[in-house]
Amino acid sequence: MENVNATFQYCDQLVRDFEKVITTPILNKSSVYYTGVDLGTAYIVLAVLDENYQPVAGAYRFASVVKDGMVVDYIGAIRIVKELKQELEEKLGAELIYAAAALPPGTVTLDSGAIKHVVQGAGFEVTNVLDEPTAANAVLKIQDGAIVDIGGGTTGTAILKDGKVVHVDDEPTGGTHFSLVISGAYKMSFEDADQYKRDFKNHRELMPVLRPVIEKVSSIISRHIRDYQVKEIYLVGGTCCLEGIEDIIAKQTNLPTYKPQNPMFVTPLGIALNCTQEIL
Image 1 (cartoon, rainbow, N blue to C red):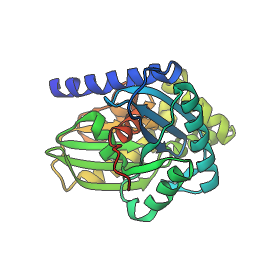
Image 2: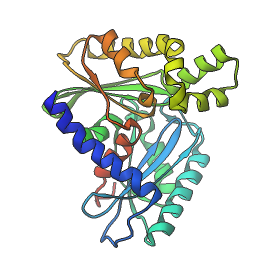
Image 3: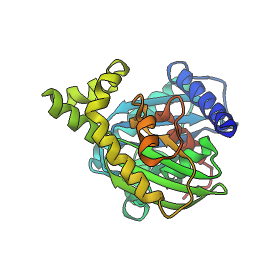
């Protein structure tokens, strides 16, 4: 457990620093800025780091341009990324040139071109496209275990051995499915259910309703890790903000399950940490 605390100490500090610069950007000039673009099913997040790889600015917006890890609204995605880019450039008083992006594991050959073209279409020079769990591990720094990224549309699992990803997999089931269940149970629209889910005050009340979906996510994780000697699970992704989700996953998988204080911003920060000046 000591190692877990040490790992999350770095992760949580980086995320706290990022949360601060979303509202108050750091305006000290940097010789270069590295941007991580995270095209999520629910949110598009831009994380900007300076030449020392420290957070200096960030922005995010709710969007429905990606479904199950694939870009379904190409023009809409470009427009939002471009708007967020311009917003951050105005705040920083500097041009953001270099960006990296990521996608769910197992979709790299299918969709990396679309993701790259979205980021390029928004005016960035793309330096890297990697899978989300590998990006997340730049922040988590896990040596051995499974990183599980539960996003809006999919659950992605990456198994690490000696700090290297040895297996990745991704399956539909994520926050969208949680919202659909709430919508049905509470007789409310999908949009209202989605908002209801995001309010931490409702999490305890929602847990019995969402337990079957969380158990399905747990079974996906169990299936993906069964052929590997995984001893610990680490959760990232916006859906993991649900209070108590880690306890159910731990019970279902019989493995210690941990999550950082704010799992939503781990992957975009990891993408930015993987940004270099070598253009693809």
